[in-house]
Length: 104
View (cartoon, rainbow, N blue to C red):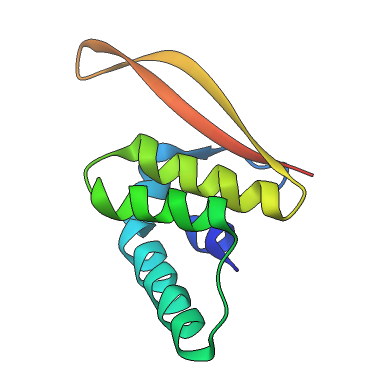
């Protein structure tokens, strides 16, 4: 399961959520293929991963649902995803920048 690689989240490198979100369609495609493959071969995905993946598919506009799924993927690999938020100014408005890093 290379969902974290597809998302672009790496160890020791902070990745902005703006770089992760464009990869969502590919992550969903790979997840659907994994579910289909498990169905064809009579196996199953871990229940937590499947539940979080279904949540991600049911909420296509939610960045939170995507990150919950990616955190579940990281936990299966014995890792965690650290989120660091910081305030920035974009186009004259204050906003929050979310940076994600893989911890092993």
